[in-house]
Image (cartoon, rainbow over the protein chains, first blue to last red):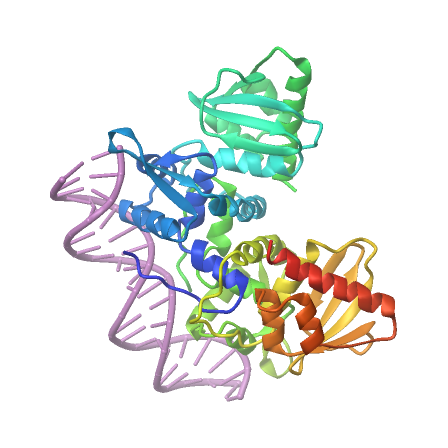
Length: 220
Length: 220
DNA sequence: CGGGATCCGTTACGATACTG
DNA sequence: CAGTATCGTAACGGATCCCG
């Protein structure tokens, strides 16, 4: 049972940080934004977090009502965001936009799974989707599948496969990160590392537009 | 010289947290959003922060280019946000909106100055200002003065007095916090704790509209 | 007195090892 | 696989001192 440290200030910003201000907490929420996850999956994505800290943070998040734990078959726990936890997504989004202003340093490691980049993409996408855009995309990166839904001016990403998407987009992880981080222009990215299949040219065009918009947002 | 702890993850969200994720850092930025401040002023507002931690955080923020330190007369240092530091305001705003979802706990202390409530008000105000609103307000709370500028669909708050405002609004701290925290309805607040002087009834009406809008946003 | 620096006890973090 | 237990290290937090 983790002991609580609080700023004890009568101020909503302090209250928010009392819930999500601890080290790793916002990164855990970030990864859960891409859909429910198991303990080991979170640990892999958060490259380097100690198991006891992850336990600590998850318990606190559950206590505060941001996360729920479901025991599924074979005694495996699955953690997912509550509505309250989802409400933290705007914080994550602003952190992504702010962090994009800084150069990546050399001494970094690529995350252990796609959750972080999924959340970053959808965060940026939310800024530029128009009500006219309407498609679903199956994004497959080195075998990992994500499912993107764009409709009614909103964008949502889930960490799962799908067979009924409007289009299938295949690429590899480093190329996708380069796009996010700005090492590749959207055109270079598209030309070199992309495999896009769609029955509808219009939806393919919408998807490309979204992707270059994402890159633009993350560089502004 | 503080040693740096980094998540070392190739992800903009992690990079953001490497800059502003340490304890107290976002609260320092929050207070600086209300205008330049001296060391002791920050320490008073951040009720309870140790001097060495404040030094630590300020030095790191300066290193990262979010804050500048100006030596003014009599060797007093004044800290202010750079443009990059200002860019963190959206993060603060979202934290305020998220934190407003939680009940204030009993064991809290009121901040040592008005900076935190100033930032919270303007954060909420940004969400609801319309391009038609246009006024400046001198807000005086228990002797402390803030200056609010609303124009072109934006809202800005400075922590200073002014003589040329369109209207002068006087109240007391606890009543203002009650409004923010939801203990008072806007109507109760206005009836009981307010003193509003303005030569222009239209601008006074705009101000009241803004204030009740702020309360609404913080409760949504 | 304001702006720190130094010291030191306490708490949290982080790595590894271990258990059901 | 999903955590617990242990333990060294680093950060926090309170106090005191220092210097202009």
